[in-house]
Image (cartoon, rainbow, N blue to C red):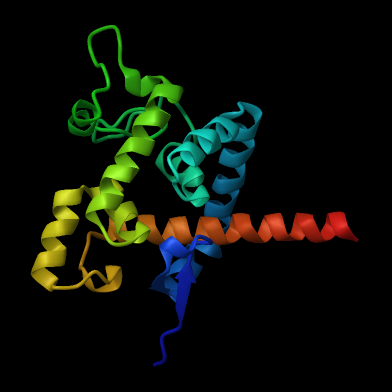
Length: 196
């Protein structure tokens, strides 16, 4: 059986090859694509994307990552995961302490979408210093940098397909790739329609 591969992300720094069929599973999922569209619409109405783009540009973070909250929280600044991660960027307690986000009985900076966006940018840069590509950064954002590092050492590879990461983490990366592909294609169609 021949396996097709897909280079993901529009930024060259993402240049990672993933198995196309694993990305296509999410790209062809009508439920997932409807979720992406619903989250984008919500974020645009609230002007979240505009603000996140400014912060990420200031930190030279690839533009594609402004869409990460679609997978994390659907841009919901008050989202709380089963594991206790909080806010639009789903930052857990350990990461919040590392990023010096204030957290107390009546205050949690993770619920402030502007502060948590700046913190997420810092965290993504922190991860990028520790991993050779943005795909591994995504995996580390999801499952934790120590976990990804230990698998890289154990498997002696940086190939996400060979790291034997949890299914949830692999799906996280595939979802992100499918989402970026969808968003890019929608933008291209709009551009073509505008130029006709």
